[in-house]
Length: 118
Length: 268
Image (tube, rainbow over all chains, first blue to last red; front, side, top):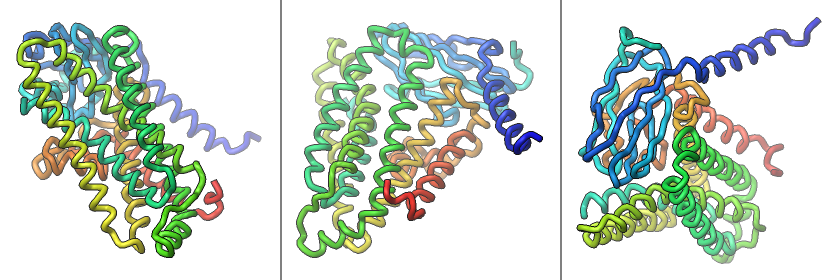
């Protein structure tokens, strides 16, 4: 008889769901370019039900910090550099972000159930 | 100038408040100032290193590296704060007794001091690397850089002042309540840092978000306002948290409380 089968299967279930959550092959990548003190595009629509990868490419000579309170993201983008990170899945709606080094620069990520996932 | 001052103030504030709390919490321990200064020095070197890495070897910190590094720094700090609180739950009584009796410093070994140095170094390194990168851009920016330099100085000064004020304020707490207050402060500080770490782990795709922005209290208290910032550092206030952050916050609270109030763990 297997010792404590329920505990073992619970652990397996957790591991499996964690792996499902980090499955790299399922991610679509979208790029936001930062140039002339603006995020471009300033409004981005992503599928609500899956995880997506966002690349922020900084073409300006000042560093930026892509920050969003509602997405709990905080990403340093060096001058003429780029970073990538994950967002979602999320409830459909508007999630605002800004440049923490210059609060006049802002944008929004829209999670939409109808958007193409893959 | 004002914009620069505000940015630098925000970067310095978190580290300054954390140092103020741990400095108060180790009140009466011999040599703590020196260990904190070592921590500040190590943190600044680390911050400069991270900033240099972020600009020269962009690839290393361009993907998940940056988020994982931040999560690692934060979780190290959480571990050290936990250790401190568990240690204090066993030794606060002696410290209090000796402070009462002679009003002098207490020799109590190097255990909490190492934790103190590491917490300081981590706090300075995390916020400092952003500040260093920002300042570096100003320094190489040319036009208007002297006004921005002045703004930076004002911002750093104001952040340090906030730390000093908190430290002075905490020292006014009567001794019989003192270590109770500081250990609760450290408890919430650790939980808040743990929630921040969860955000970074999710950013790197290591853990699921379990829902972004489960609620939003921005209208009630804007996280970007000064009270919002203070509560963010002190209690881990997040206006619009992800599920994984709430989970990390509660789990950290629970684990530290468990360790503090279980006598057989106290010999750690």
